[in-house]
Image (cartoon, rainbow, N blue to C red; front, side):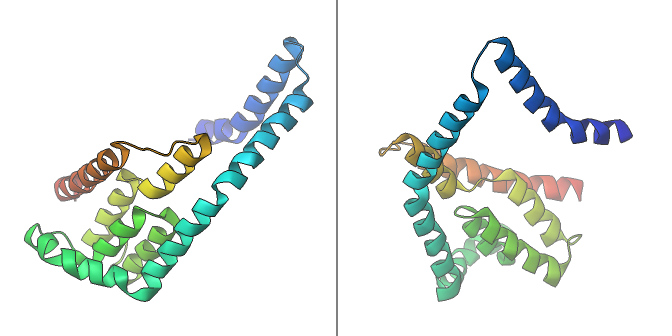
Length: 175
C-alpha cells in the first residue's frame, strides 16, 4: 500500500518533468508551446461558456421549480413495477445533466437512508456507472463545433439505461 501511495504522489511531477525533458531533447521552445496551448484552451472555454451556463441554469430551474418531482412521480409507476427505489429517480435524472447536482441529491439519500443501505449502495454504483450526457455532449461537441449529433443522444441514453440496469443487478447480486 505504501508503494502505491508513493507512486501516486510522484506520478504527476514525473510526467511534467518527462514532458519538459522530451521538449528540451527535441529542441522545442516549451514555454511558447505552453502559452499557445493555454491560449487555445482559453478560447475553447470562452466558446462553450454560454452553453454551460445555460445548462447549469436549466438544472437549477429543474430542482427549484418542482419539475423534477413531477417527472419523478410520472416515472414512479414503472420504477415501482421494476422494484427500483423511487427515491433514486431524481438523482438518476439530474445525473444526465450535472454530476455535482446529482452528488448533492446522493448526499441527501445518504443522510436519509445511510450509505450502507440498499438505496445508498445502489445510487453509489449508479453514479459510477453513468455519465453526465448533456454536459459531456455540450463540452465535446461545442468545443469542436459539431452541431448535428446524429445518434449520439439516443446511444448515450441507452448506455445510461444499461448502466442503471447493470447497477441494480450488481447491487442485488453483491449485496
